[in-house]
Length: 426
Image (cartoon, rainbow, N blue to C red; front, side, top):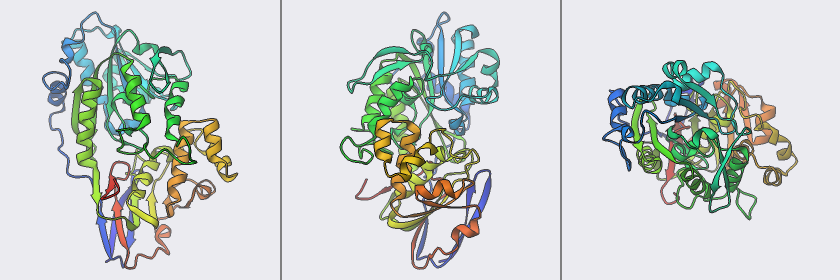
């Protein structure tokens, strides 16, 4: 079987030629509903559609000080600025909250600061002009609000203490927390660096030099990171949560508002139906794109495509991965872990000084051991080679020498979103 497939690569589209394969199957998300009237959908999600909660107008009054917690620029794919704009109008016009009582807090976690242009994109022009928009600083002043049952000291931004807090986030599968969104905008979003480290270091197996098998994509029950996040978020008195699910077209598919946990849980179930793809068996060769810009803006973000793709590849198989990475590796400490990797002490080093960037690097390297991986990228081979993948800058060269003859091939155009689930394994 021969086929040419077109896949997103940054802002471009590249063609990959497959020749002589036994079978070629595309793993795409199931068709998702798309919201035609976003304003009406928003109104419903804060009024009669509230999940596990009274409508928002009954929980916020004119005299309240309100903090809207939103995700950072790496989540710009969900166009949250449009929802924050609608929320701002609702708070000001319906709930009569004056602009000076409202602030937008960008849940950076440990990510880099936002530029002023990015702040306007994140919050929307209307809110950027009318209210204070600030970045969370995980190394700045944070307030202790309690401790989880696992011993995590929960310190958070003062702007989510003693104010009405509304959390706006996007629900997607997450490589550590099972699913993003909801409680994740509190921890790690607006938590201190130490709180984030305490939570995230639970991603490593307590006994073996390996990631904890309870931690991973689509895993919520008994996931120590997820459960710790839930407890931490419960220590912050969140007034209302709004969870966004986006179709691969980029349009809104679902808005789930209400109680922070209950509304988020409903959004996870919706996400699962659309983005989890059940397969009978793993393939010899997997061709995966992280989904193009902004999903592949850097390796730190784009590696989700590879990690999801590996779920569909058999042990010892081959992967062709498209991840442009115009911003390089992304997180400042991501490539810093190349040195301990080359010295054969990556696990030891990460346990001694755990960082989120370090764990994502660790998980990337761990998964790349499953088989051969070739990556189409702008990152140089000196960086990718020690991690376990060969870098290419030309699509024709990427495919050159790959033997598709009588091989089972999966093509995953939106690897950053689609999660293959293997019958009998998941």
